Length: 293
Image (cartoon, rainbow, N blue to C red; front, side):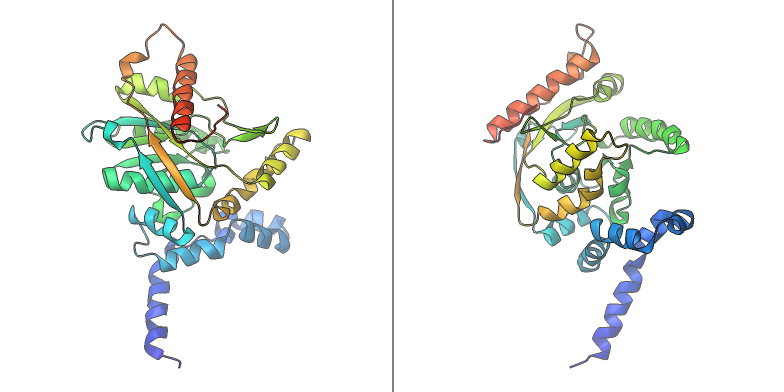
């Protein structure tokens, strides 16, 4: 039976949360919308799961803030187990260096873990796609921006992140893992987190998270490399890959913190980054996971 009261409450909730919704039309902007045919825009909305994300925001107990990490995982029926939290000192500022197997779920899962450990005191660099998830923008620092203005601003945002008193999670590979010669392989790690560790006197905590993307994602990435496309077609499906993880359980393993004083001049920062990457690979072995690093 139709209930006017229920309808009114639903509309009030919708109006309260509408400002947090993902709106592909607004993200594209009027100029780009004019250039793209309607079917292409509708394709993007489906691939980026606009309606699903907005439904998750509608159902969330906490539509904005750290609680949404848990709400998003609940909506996706994603669970996780953690190992090694006993290594962490709650009074220390760390740089958490994590492998990057998936491209989306890592930020949500580790965000949920960090919420339990540090409340809202953490920052996570993410792709511009995830940066449009408005309920979590206070925790996200968008990277890989393409415009020159955004690139100039990026250095400032990164510096502020490391200078803050918040915990910092980084994915030094930058790109999610690829399949090379039939094996899912983590990309080489960049050195920035080593440099920032020494500069800001933050110890580095290696983290491993289990999981991998679908065969379809790896196929699209391979096609992009084969034809030397400027855009990795797999990136268009990263949100799709997130929703393919429905019902999965992940394992997050924290290694022992590495003192920032370890990263001396006996090796280059790039060599130190590779060494930390190897430590993450060993954490994967402790999980019973196989990880090609």
